Length: 54
Length: 159
Image (tube, rainbow over all chains, first blue to last red; front, side):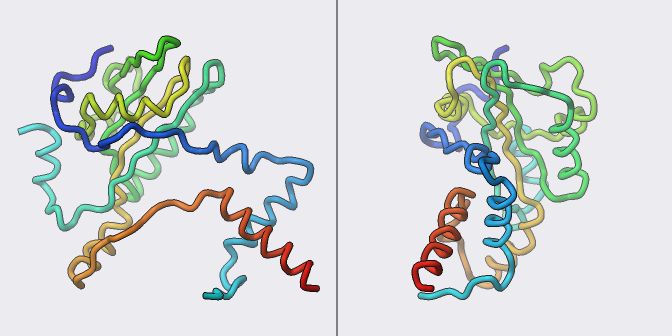
C-alpha cells in the first residue's frame, strides 16, 4: 500500500535513522527467580527507599 | 490547509503537550493480534491521557524494502475508526525510512505518534514560569535493575 500523497515530499520530523533499542522484554523475562527479580524492580521504584548521595 | 495544520491551528502551540513516538516490532511469526492493543490504546484516548497524532503499520521485506500501510487501509478497523478520524498525518515519507531503520527484515511494526495530554498543563505552566526543556528521556528497566543490584551488592560487601 502506498503512503498518502500528502506524506511525500514533506520535511520529516524524525530527522535521522532510528537505531534499534534494547529489547526490554528480555531484561524482565522471568529467569531462575522471577519473583525475586520483580521484587527488585518494585523496590527500586518504591517511594523513600533511597536517599541520594551526590 | 493540511490535516496536520488544522489540528495545530485548533489549539495554541503553547497548550500542546509533549509529543512522543514509538516503533513496536513484531518479528516474523510472532504476532498475536487479539484486539487487546487497540482496546488499551482506546482507553488511553478516551481517558484524555493521550491524543493519537499518527499511526502507521510498516512491513520490512527480506530485501530491506519497506511497505507502509495507513490505518485507513485496514478493512475492519472496529473501534479504531474513531482514532483514525482524528489522525493528523504528521509523519512524512522520509520519516518512514528513518523509523524503519530500526526494524529487522521480515518483521512488521506499528508506528505510533501521540501527544501526552496529561503533561500539557504542566508543560504550559513551566513555559509561563519562564522555564524551557533542556533534557528529557527514558530510563531503561535494565538500568534500574542494574542500579538496585549494585546497591545491594555494595550493602553486602559493607556488612
